[in-house]
Length: 234
Image (cartoon, rainbow, N blue to C red; front, side, top):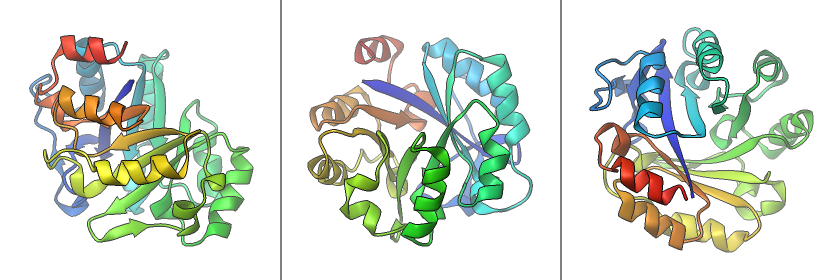
């Protein structure tokens, strides 16, 4: 099972995402690092466990507020060249795609950024299907083209089921939502995002047919031990 740590960037700082309430995100307080600086947080995560991937949400780019965190993310890539970066930068048009596609990142297309299916398909074609799809569920429901929920033919190989109401809430993952999408397709790789509290939650997700999970709060609170991470990553 792939366990992928998450960092949320806002104004160059790593913040603690909680229940999708982006207006009230504050600098992260972590048991594995005394800093909220991105390079310090990434170094602490990799010292805790040799993760292969890192998910980065550029909240400025996603929300179209202020300058993006592209230079910060480039710095992470330069310091950790063997780390595979999955980056959600709110891409939904050709200029934004051009800005980010010159970097050696795995582009995430978040459904929340697309008003309709045609918009999504246009960007998908430009990426030649080499991207990761995030199906985004907010506190008030799904954001994005409905067709992406109904037909897996629009999906790339890797799909994140992003349940923002569960992010940072320490309430467990939304297994019902995961099972719904696993039933829709058995051939795509599914990744759960939101709510993971413990190794038990990760085991439940694996039993539900999930290929990987995005985790943040449980790592920073040391709710999943280094030994558990090593075992689950086998």
